Image 1 (cartoon, rainbow, N blue to C red):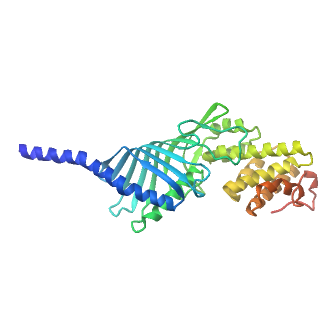
Image 2: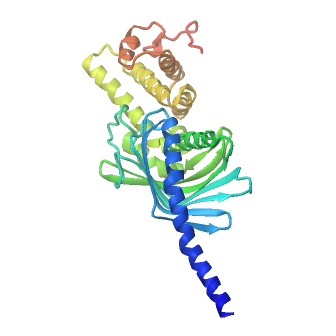
Image 3: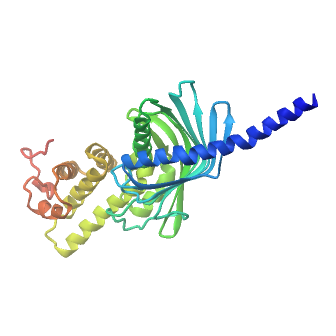
Length: 355
């Protein structure tokens, strides 16, 4: 009996210390190099992945502790962010079937930031340079993400996960349902703003959303020309909030500066065309239209002809972006293009702008 107890104790010790060592070696020697190679194939210039220890947390789950991941992109997936840093207290993979085709990724207590603001609360200047990378810092409490894993082609599964996670970071909607709760923090002109946000499901997919009351102070720090409908839309895409405000503020300040330099510049038309152009370049025409339409819908005191002019010039901005017009040509085209409406008096019954 004593020998049996000693044997069981020895096996338990071997399992307790041996399995984590084996997991660590397999992860370090095989899993990490595989993931890093695939990340290079799918748009990451270089990456670094490290962790403190690994453990079998249940019969079908493995957990890695104190994981740190750094990514430097070279593709459209993350190119606006610079180097991305991810620090995770607990990172788990759960296998939900014996064929290993249904996997669930789970992160607890983690932080995502870019190199611009690593280790600090994000800063964003009020002038908002529309060409600068979007700084961000996101603190997550819990994130659960299911993966349909193809054992015959694991690379394609990793590519899809990379593509969807990158879309989430950029504030887009994705197909895969997920669970998330977290917080974002920004410092603008030495004042800190933060908001909580979580996973939501909408007609266009799965994403994250925040409460408009949490976004309002950030919007007001950028501009007093922010409408209620515009605020509601931005709250549905909180990870795009700062970037959207930077772009809008950039269009306002650049159009104002152009008019001060040359009084012939149609400031309002240039502002709308440039704003719509920059939004389309960054997020595509559909989302750009949603943002500019939301702004116009919230301007209850604006007269009909003025609104028609703004809608029309917003369309021209999208057309310039889709047509490959260089940003440096926008001002000149605003002043010379006969399709541009430079003041509401140009509108007549026979000149109503259409699509």
